[in-house]
Image: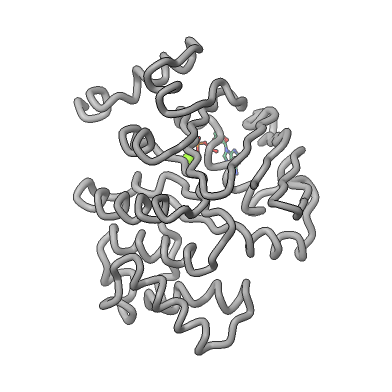
Length: 250
Ligand SMILES: Nc1ncnc2c1ncn2[C@@H]1O[C@H](COP(=O)(O)OP(=O)(O)O)[C@@H](O)[C@H]1O
Ligand SMILES: [Mg+2]
């Protein structure tokens, strides 16, 4: 189980996260939804120790770390247990798909080259990229690049995968294949925390939805609770702005 308690983060005068509590059970897919600028990326970055929080604790089973003060050793331990999939893929442009996936296995997990290579290949095969080991990012479509990003996260065999709007940088034609890979992972029981604007997708795959606004969790519950019977006015307002009609009418 993963538990985040009292996560706070400010940038200058702006309090972006004002005390977030969130729990993800093993094998569960939890979706975080909220308007742009509500702190979703900051939340994931603090969890992956890419950012220092001002307050907050992270517990993963019996492992416990302060998100405010983490040493290099803590950071490495967190990165062994959490893996992030970024909005903009964040692949190294000068490395092939295989090297990109292998890198974390070598650096974070200190695996030997042949073992790392074997595991990286297997991860790429699992996302349907068995034919693309030697391709550079520039030789792959956006959807394929993001699948490399997912393979890189999966290969680490992390306790939890954190997804930051994994399809929002993609041309519409590539969204489906990436969502399919994420759904497959969810079906296989991979624990995941996913920030997404794809409401229909989130509704289908997440077991638990957390709506954040103004730095706090406003409402959380099952997809049915949140999408069909939202209780808070703020949630209703948000859902009105992100229905398909609204998104695709522009
Ligand atoms: N490194 C930073 N420095 C200053 N402000 C930041 C930084 N990162 C994010 N912010 C601000 O924090 C707020 C939340 O950003 P973000 O976490 O990216 O939101 P979301 O992912 O929900 O769109 C925004 O107002 C953003 O401008
Ligand atoms: Mg964001």
